Picture (cartoon, rainbow over the protein chains, first blue to last red):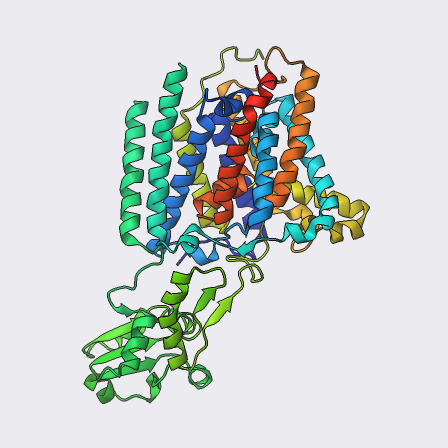
Length: 191
Length: 172
Length: 173
């Protein structure tokens, strides 16, 4: 298995890749118009579901790519970092995040895109996010038990459900395509 | 045309997704000339006749740790190789295909998929997550039995406490 | 140089999304990790606090994570975000969409919009800190890797935003 290609010991290569990958990330987001708070917020008012379309398209492309590269022995899945699961902080955190998102109109990534293209509201989301991190970081030691609760490590849907990896992949693809069809229907209704 | 591109992408996703469901696991399957550690363990346990397990590593590695009934390549003569029904070759991870070329006159040679590492991981020390469902625990029982047969010990993993999967210090 | 008056239309979201998916896949293949955003902010916050009050920083379960290893100023996500700024700027420059402005509905004053942007950012930071990630790290990357936490975050965050939207309609119309 050849990938991941850059090891932990090659810091320079890793950070260079970070900039390059980030540039692709920012470019794609701006292309789609997700650097615009007014376009982004359309998602939550059923007007413009670009957020969902971009997110799910990206998700299934990467997910299918990971599955097949692994299956052909080209990517060592065991060496890829899987974000950890902490059920209770993530549940509560997602609620907070969603609330903040619909008020700010931008998430941290898209706020950077907005800021880079001159949008002052994006810059203020960035500042607020940074300030929030400082504040929460300082307060978090009082909630350390909650912060570590519901820890399940690198838990995946196949492990949770007992279904084969490929079956979950197929289910997600079907879910995404259904969501796309639904989005087109909703947007046509609005027009 | 944009809608054509959409349909093509959607079909591509649907087809690759369907094949993923058919494929099942994301792990690369053993090649035609390979055998999985679990299958080899079953052959050994069932005392399959004419089975010869060959260690192609150094003598030091062989002395430290080896598969049950395995013999060091250097200590085997050509006759033993030829008279065996099935020869299994293993190294630490992936047995080099070059080793097999030296055995072209042996009837059936297979490499152990994943080598010694796979033997330890899959057979001797299989892992059960503490948050596994009842059905997953039942399915694990057969692997636990196989593990104990070979003197290994099944592992219970507390996922919250263990190190992360993938490389060490990460975040989002 | 006069600014291009007619900015080009946005790209198709499915195609842009597929392109983003390829970038994400490239990240897995190149460095064995996905994309993210909130970690860069957490790391920067950790570094700033550590510079002023190192014991407080070390005591924080959030900051301490970013203070070991290579340290907060060599955080992979920070370099990635620098790239995001660059890529976004290039795309906007090419499309004639570079514009210094406050994006807001006409009926909302600039100051109010900026205050809500800041406040929303604070709330999102609290959420992302607890969730160990945001829409990029948990929902997108975690989602693509079929992480339980990632899918939980994706569903709940979007449900919460959708649920709250009617209550904050004044902000957007």
